[in-house]
Image (spheres, rainbow, N blue to C red):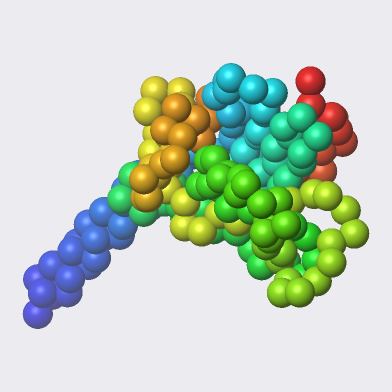
Length: 184
């Protein structure tokens, strides 16, 4: 009887060690994504930053000519892939989608309808809320590469990011916004 109890005790110790190793491996896998990421260079004035925080949240913002947009939400790692999903907001803003790379402009400008975060609202400003809808990224060298799930209109435009070394603790977003109020 004592041998059975010792056997169960040793088996549970081994199981606990295996669980701790798996948890440690998951943390290491997630840690490679945590940090500040800057968009790859484009042929027109555009810059964006993506902050992946250690508390499983993210902050994204971009500037292009006179356009500005942002997003915030949560991230998970699924099968070596970083998945970003935006939070819903209750403010009336113009809405754009992260994966939209080119906008087709109709010949009749009266038919242009710009989507908003709340149906039939009238935004007070010109800023965009950028929706990340389970957007997937994989890690390659020092780059986060976006996995486009639909054919791209402008395949030459990449939504990839290079690593930038900065503090990304949960409160770093406020410091980042304060320190980087305007893009270069």
